[in-house]
Image: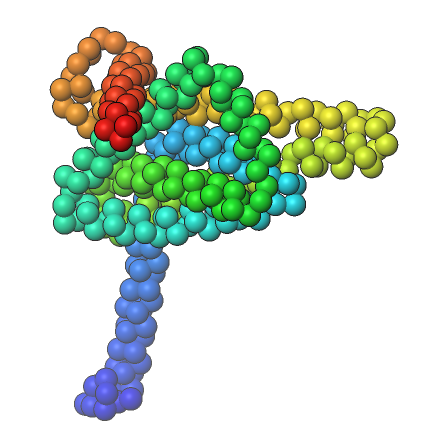
Length: 312
């Protein structure tokens, strides 16, 4: 020990040097802990802000997946939901690294993707409104037809469609989350975006699992209570609540789609950001979303008719 620390020092000096080194090591250790604590505090704040910003899209994601996980035999609802959940996790594993790399090497792509995604969300939202207003009977027929599909091919097709929808929404969730931490360090960006992506998947599909099993839980309560008493009333309430909750989620999700798309345009297109400054922000975002959605519906409808004419 003497040869390592100080060959010419006496024992007391050696003890002093040794104690000082322990103090330095301890202070270094606690400094590292302090840095980690500060980093976690920053991540907690940024994750909360990012999660708040993505709430609207998460609401639509919840509504979409609640609809897609219903319409199967009771024994297949949770397996179907689990398949969609695994697909959603794979989507996040693909999207998160690509978004972070683009932000480092080609940051303008983030705004471009956000705006393109805004047009997609506006289209989805306005199309739902038009479908409700002008093609309601067709939608009801479609829902009934989907409920009658229980074979494996139909199930796989529905799972694939749900995963594709989740992929588009996941892009928006990840990029909006990333947009809230663009000024932060790369470490905070990685942890925050990853945390939001994971929370989005667990939160959305966990709630969907509860929703799609509400009617089964209600039937069991009614059965075990022999259709009498408080548990029977509670069971009946759960059974009747399921379609109402899905309908509410669908309406809220549609409005959220239009608002989120309008917000993307307002914050990422300079001209629109300064347009109509005296108008309340929510009204302005709703107007931008509606206009963009109507334009996209017109383009898509015209494109489909043109394609049909060319094929004919």
